[in-house]
Length: 637
Image 1: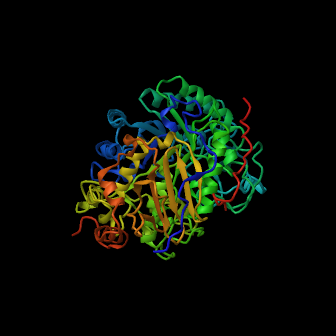
Image 2 (image 1 turned 90 degrees about the vertical axis):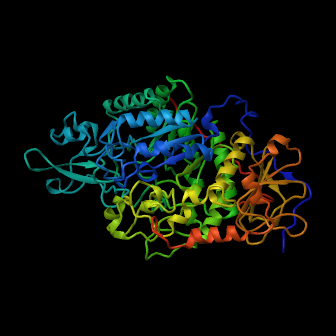
Image 3 (image 1 turned 90 degrees about the horizontal axis):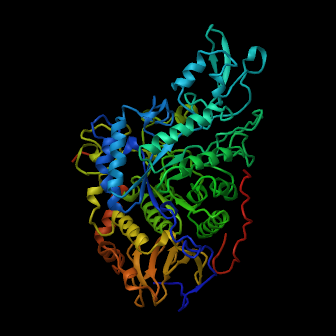
């Protein structure tokens, strides 16, 4: 077997990122290094058989998250909602929608999470409400210029009789971002802004009543035991003064904009005053509560402004999520991310999948850098499912070795792919309709989880109903077919999280490693060596290290284990202590197998291809100088 020879001794750059202890943060808040598991309530577990996941179902399955090794959960919205956008259209922020349960069910969930040692982060949606929110209902029955309308962005139209929208802004979900209302007397009236669905009117955060109401909402959930908030569309609350015209197709997810020009409704400087006030609210409570931004911004430097010391604590790293599976790109985004966040003293976050993007087990099944549509359908080019899962496992192991906080999306620990053959007639994402059936949207990553291979709905609920159809092959990904199986994706995740905690990788350091070709990402986190081979040829490990975890079993070329293509390895450096050398027996047996075992080959192939339905029988680390990033200037108070 051909290999790339590596130096007999490790040679590293000066540290790019110091550990928390080296930076003087010996008692750092939990969220700086936490692994946070996202739960999308509609699709996690259904307790009553109606086909929709709910809070009691989540509570009954929380032990899975604890056994996996996560530190916290993040719950997507479960508030009272007409469900025009799967709960992101909130009608009442202080009640639970009956489809998900009751307020008592929410209390029980928070209590159980804390019993299991899990923190619980809840979603907050401050950019817009539902059109059935009492505020908006009042606005529709009130006159133009009224106090009720001033909470939202109502404007007069343009053209003869005001028949045209106030400007050319477009909705993220397609079509115009303005909707005209009928006044109380039956005449055509004003227009209101909705950057998302027509049923999601944008709030006007310059109105004093809006920030006061949300401060009260934050306290309501903090008083009930929430450990923090994930802030939906954190970059969108403030619009440019005067609502200047802007006429481009745009979005917030993959393939976001058709121009480099920043829209006048994203990432306006005024949002930072809002988050400084939220910081003060959360600081009133004990226990290191956390504020997390979902902010799609044009650069990591702009993202760092959201996590200045007196604002939010974390921000999702979408630059990393969207980075192609190429070593140069991966090294570059890791370097840029760490330097940007270090410049303001914030932790870097790492994420590969969530409820808004194509699952990474599918994304990585296409050639690196492919321009994928916003949602994949049956008539689109299909991914290489086996290659996608192989790369996804390697990418996850690489991500979990990075210092900072890592986010997992439900089901990725099972290796779940996107549902790329979902019939168009069952799609529920409003993007599909609003785009004129040109963008299939996000339903493919939101399919209910398979828990038990031979049960109806793969154990998602007590009966066969699921709000979105589960694809063929779902039983082979079920949890009960992976627990205790050497080489399964679940066991890989469990072992990686165990080792990440034992070795302190989340609070660790990072120094790039010299000696490998440009197709390899190699670094040292404290005393752990990480080698990810993104190239085609296998590479050798240094002779004096011991393998701890690998994303696939490592073959042996006669001189020692080698790292095949699309595989990541964690190894202990020679000065590691015996305690840190300890490994999970299941995972270690799998990683030390000299060749890919038949059982594993059949598992990974069947998982990617079987057709049974549920319930039925640029920068090279070796040559390129370290990137210099100017310190981020935090917004003034």
